[in-house]
Image 1 (cartoon, rainbow, N blue to C red):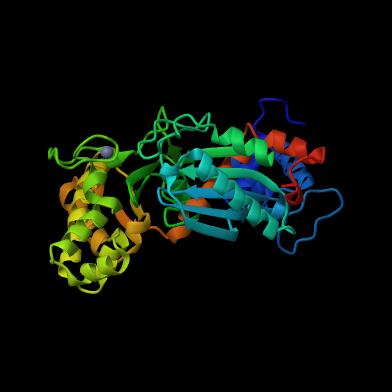
Image 2: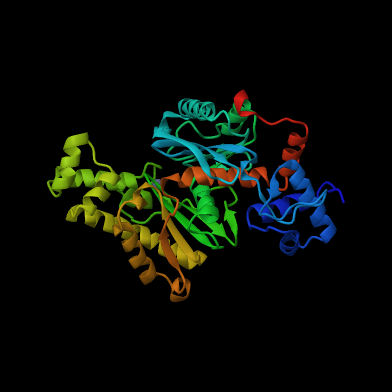
Length: 416
Ligand SMILES: [Zn+2]
């Protein structure tokens, strides 16, 4: 029963073992609907390729597939990156998304792709040099802070990324590292990581809202990441929430959610409060570092500063109003708040909750949960690893992967 071309059973069997945790042939047959003969053959092929290994104590007997199997997360590694508006985070992970090594530093995405991606290449190279004894790198996954046409991996008119429109990120990294590369919007990869490894496990309809410098959302719809027809789904930061023409957004429009409730807006409002003498704590932060950030506002609120508290509360309400609309429209079972601003204190999430439960339809909120990310500031790289693994083991890419291994190709870490 060798697989004919167009037969996806090999990828399907790997998926139920890797993602759904099927351990035995019976569980594989149950989950895939394959016959005993085909399931047996596919399990044997995956074991030959090294992608699954015997699990537990049941001994495997001559030539037969082992009784219990598991995914071999250590059969290779992934190089992944989370490019934020103001930071670069890179990691080497195993094929299951576990972070083996991590590097992070401040960066400015508006410096353009040549400078930022050049630095990213250096960080990748440094990681790999540090981890020479690890298995070969099999794929690269990169999240970027703007819309991406996923099929081509090209950024599409990203509002905060001048010079990035149509830049061939994938080609550049494939040429440099010789492995397949996937690129997606950072919020999409965070949603994916949270869904597979974080607090959204087991939920089929999820809205992941990232509140960082900007604001964006990633959608899991019916158990699938929903990218939309151009890859721009979930770009909620630029929904107009106020007619006030003085509220200018970096996208060029006025009145955007991001321009009143994003991290940049919070920092600016905090700085204004410091200059106006309304907050001694923020004034001290301004004096010390010459500027006030959203993190300063959150820290000041945590220390009981009434002005900072009120700023976070207002941002939470504005955010909550937009999320309430999403809840009515999309009926998720879980809202996850992530991104830098969400990590600080409970004020923001409490205001979001209050508004969403008040403004959404009762049926839509009956079982609705609103939670903070469980992955913390590693959510971006874990999500990028999840994306890269899902693509590497997809129905289209897996047959190539197995072919490469059979011919001894693939990129050894030492080559990089
Ligand atoms: Zn905008």
